[in-house]
Image (cartoon, rainbow, N blue to C red; front, side, top):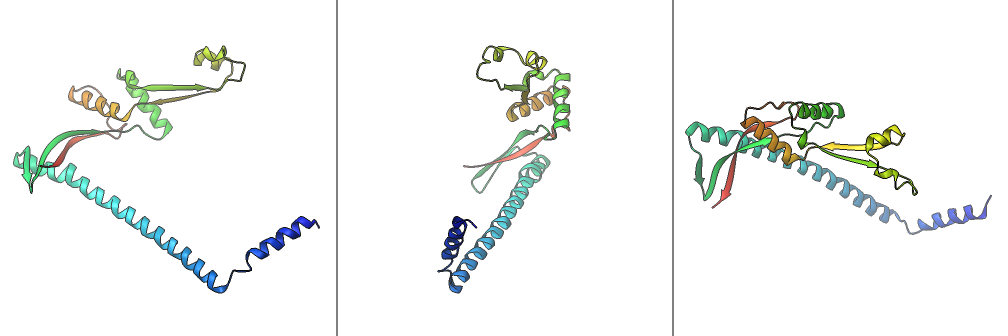
Length: 188
């Protein structure tokens, strides 16, 4: 057998010569404490998410409904100004097939100007002239291309809001869109 293997085995054995029962117990305790901290962090993160969901229910549902019911558009409570503002939310689907459906919908309703595209192509060292060709030409020549298509989140919200306000077509379900009122609370 190779002498280097025996030396590494001896070196590994030497690494544990100071590893006493007490040191092993201390190490185990540190590891258990770390695992307990991980559990506490997970629990705290879940509690934080729950609190945010509860707060959002007040801001997006309960307070706006009560203010609208009473006809109030602005109130002051404990030195805080509370007013209602419209809100819009929407996202592109993560599923690639549904994402393409969303892009097709935007194109169909004449909103393709809001779609962004990025095309990346890799070329070898001596292929600078070829890099100047368009994506279609590259695909015809057999080059692999990658394209990224997206709509900026704020642009999507603006588009949804404007089309909704102008009674123009927009499929809210495709974009998981929500239009409503939110309570804004500011310190005075």
